[in-house]
Image 1 (cartoon, rainbow, N blue to C red):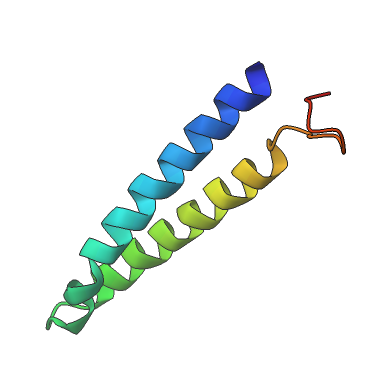
Image 2 (tube, helix red, strand yellow; image 1 turned 90 degrees about the vertical axis):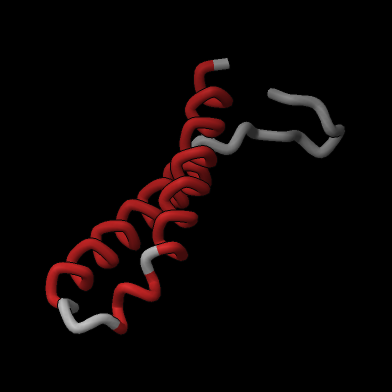
Length: 68
């Protein structure tokens, strides 16, 4: 049960960081771009970390379709 709740937290974090990342894309084209590049990079790394965490915490499903 612990792995599935951790996977749900990773999916929620991935969704939130991806949404903020998409909302901040127009800021890359503004005149003050240096700070925005760091924010976008940090959000990208956070998104990839949540993706790797969700993939690692995926519950195992056997061939019969039951857990464990």
